[in-house]
Length: 323
Image (cartoon, rainbow, N blue to C red; front, side, top):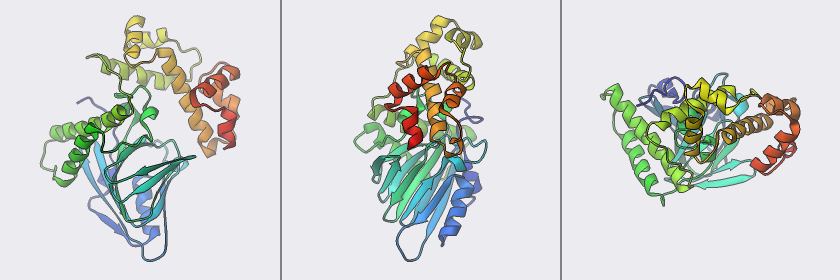
């Protein structure tokens, strides 16, 4: 298994040594805040409130089971603790039905469905009946093993019609039910990696996002993506610089990205646009001007940024800021 423990897979489950119950919304929110940092629940309806949290750690992966009476669960990225590594969360609907709201979109989740939520985006998960959801934090670096742009696999529901989904869902049930404490660390890590591969593969497969990668190129592609993540704000960044920094030829760099149905320049531009969108949608950055955001993301001109933004997202930076 490749070592992602330092910067990709995140495991807060060790904060829960045993299942914890809450009989009030205040206690529930304290629990959610301690585990997730950016989630708050608002009970729906009247009557007594009850909820519980349980968790299992398998290797570097945490599975956190939340069971609650009807509520609106709100994710606010501005509340994320500084330095948090929970870039994305796989949410698996185990019991009951819920609706996830992201800006103007609504997606229904039924038992067995799941999706990947992007923690840089605000969203609300609403349910009108007792509901059980398993949340699995996972970082962007891991998702990039399966899709050049991890945001492409976010907020895409996967249902039982996908054959890979059926395998991954059964696998999750097996992992949750069985005690893994007696297994070796190596075995637990392999089990965790297998589940995450199945989960992300099912999403990418159902939505036709998979791109084949030649043996030996996966690690190279990941390494180059990580370098771009650290360097995209440099407006003078070139494919040649990326190749030199990773000790490879420009041709091999271009071939590796072509295998992912993209080019190096397209990837860098998309990464800059994603960062600009994140800043535009985050309330604490409202004071930043659009030009400041554009230049900070690595664009050399406001006109180039605005044109690329509109082509990529279908709306202008001003439209995003106004909403």
